[in-house]
Image (cartoon, rainbow over all chains, first blue to last red):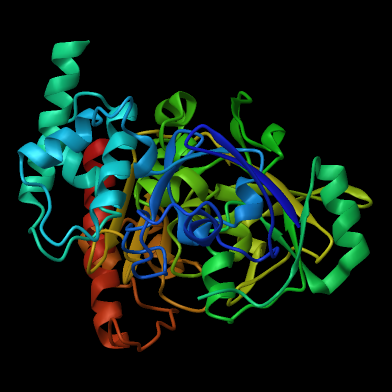
Length: 156
Length: 273
């Protein structure tokens, strides 16, 4: 079937199998390989992207369902070569080790801060319950989310 | 993991969804948010030949105050139920429980109607709607009919819906005592299904994952009606249940959890009312 998605601001039309998952569309058709497939069972959050501005797990969305809609992956966050505040905060707070969960973590936090620009630490931890990290113990990821929220306060 | 091949159809309206369902019959499944059905399809536990995507039916996403009840469109996402001002005021049990389904990403896609129609006894909202004594509205080719929630769940993943019927609305009566509610859920990890869960509203008690269907804890309710204390009533929580033994818990442990969670829920509901 023909699908037509806007990915990181770019219109992508392709003929795909009806059963194609969004994450495979992003990686194999749009050639955007930052979005990882982790558990493939809607648990780990590594494949999190924004669909119409909200975090979703792209292993559990069909490309067909996303047709006509707007997807943003971690590749689409930086503007004019400048990192997004959440990306910058991950860098500054050392919010990653192996990096596998990072694209999904960053997208989940972008969505979280959009809904709640000034979360408490507990709200950040609850907001990340759909994203697993096996390296960091989460502390620096939570710090990064809070730092990005603080930065938002300064620029707001 | 990739689902078996199927044909994808997108419905533009409820009428079109019903026409497609009539055309394809048993070979077709409705897809709402897809967060129950797609995982099953990826595991090849479900292999429908036709998927009818309801995602475009935005007119079935609403929460409206109807006086004696709150009407929730079947395509309303958990995220929108959680943040509904009307539900937060009138039916806080439902808003609270919706906010504990899965995780934020799942709540951005999953819908209340999808969760109910899927009829997984481990899901939170079926038991919550039992405790709220909701009425479901289903539309078929011959028009709409109301189904009391107590008659809806007929077996594991089986409901009173006909294959060509579409669940369109959930009607939640406003509780007699808005404060007398509690939702308790015991999980290993935040995003897991409940090992056991419990919803209480005005002396009605719904149980999550204590049998092949979501259940009312009838023996607890009878004890409460007879004047028993929360602790004494909760001792009956496992009566009439048929909890599974599985990788997460034994049946005996689930029965223990049911008694503990019902006791906590009744105590919390009492303290709120």
